[in-house]
Length: 158
Image (cartoon, rainbow, N blue to C red; front, side, top):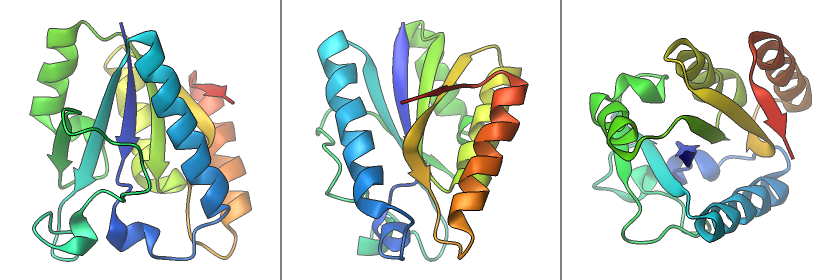
């Protein structure tokens, strides 16, 4: 079984000047549609802290994503999405072995989640153009992240 894991695409982060923002949203939405048509699970992860409180606008998942009401949503307080025991339980319950990752930010939570997923034995793919950041050297950070993850065994997919 497969899942699409979308990390930290929350208003408080997407309001920043993201590198190739439109392409980022288009890529994730295409992946959501593809996952749904294949019968795969679409899962959202929200980072929770003072600035990204789910009770306020900044902590909510950006409405530009094609999230459905019944999509599972998990919270985390660390960079690694797998730090949420509820997420790990859900993946085990569903028999998920392959995970495609997308979200924010490339060299932070996205990279940590991919690395952790590999250590937990999942087959991990990273959506090219489905992760980004707001740094002035964003393109370099994205390329470096993909290169590092590819060496570790993450499949980079279009």
